Image 1 (cartoon, rainbow, N blue to C red):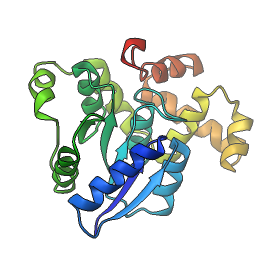
Image 2 (cartoon, rainbow, N blue to C red; image 1 turned 180 degrees about the horizontal axis):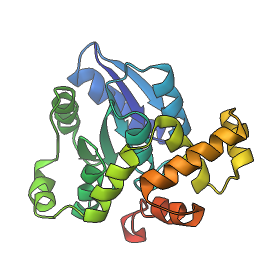
Image 3 (spheres, rainbow, N blue to C red; image 1 turned 60 degrees about the horizontal axis):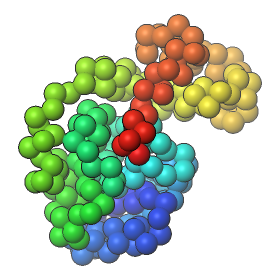
Image 4 (cartoon, rainbow, N blue to C red; image 1 turned 90 degrees about the vertical axis):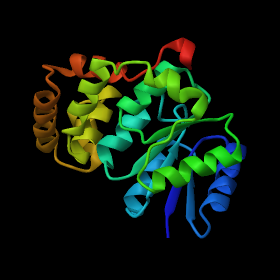
Length: 217
């Protein structure tokens, strides 16, 4: 039995996705979350989730940050991005950061169902109307390189990196994660080495590169 997690802050759209999933994969278990914190908590509690349907823009997640977080902390879970921002360059970046596919929010229930079934069968999905335009775009070397560097982090290191991005000090991170401050310092050293940065400022610049252009939001 497949387990899906729908991550979107709009209740009506979550309901529509839930219905499309239930109709396309009879017997599947469907969970829902309205923000990135809820997504991470659900995945930590239910490691058997097979697929996350992820909105790019919801509380705790702007641009590609939510996708990067999921790929960094739960690399074994497939992610289908579901977004109204369906410009080919955005879709190209989504794929370069490890998504298994992209569904525009204008997609029909039949298209959503086809995408879910394809990814659950270990395939990838793009809507036919976008596939050619996306395929014509080369991967951005920066995105591919950044995705590879982020993938080197452990789950805990990615949590520390995310909190660094929020501007928290080591002691604050230690309190948030309920670990020792010296452990945080060790993680920060390892993060800088794996990402090829020298300080918090450079780490922040790296995280900001996950944002999308304002015209795409």
